[in-house]
Image 1 (cartoon, rainbow, N blue to C red):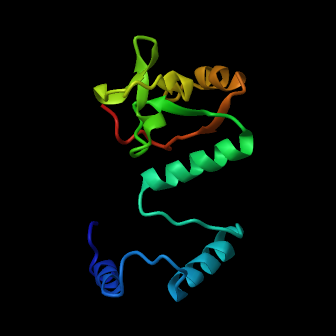
Image 2 (tube, one colour):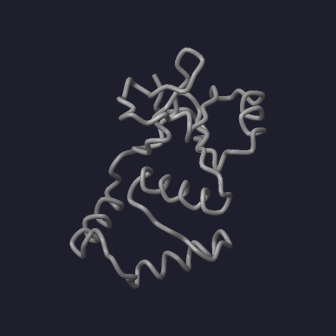
Amino acid sequence: GHAPEAVTRAALRQLQNGTTMMLPTEDSLWVGAELTRRFGLPYWTLTTSATDANRGAIRIARMITGRDKVLVFSGCYHGGVEEAHVEIRDGRVGMRNMIHPNGVDHSAVSRVVEFNDIAALEEALSAGDVACVLTEPLMTNFG
């Protein structure tokens, strides 16, 4: 359910200590160590939104691959990431929900395929210019 009492109490207790810490805290060190113990990955970056997480992931993927394009699935939502505010419109990359493109040709930095279309995904990736794929296991913000 939403707002279980124990979680609400713990969140309120933390809010009294502050919501954003710019430097490591004891809690953040513990969380990092616990995530490493559970999942075996030595480094973690925590963000406060999917937008921030996706922007960071895109930046890292572009740096590592040397590629510019981000592939998303038409109809999916990935926060306020401009490259992901696209969908298939009339067979081409178009702005999602009629968002104004601000003079940017988003097909230069975005690829879009229909959700669950494996053949289209493979074809889009075959060009070798995609830095990363943003996806969600279930399409939850469409329509």
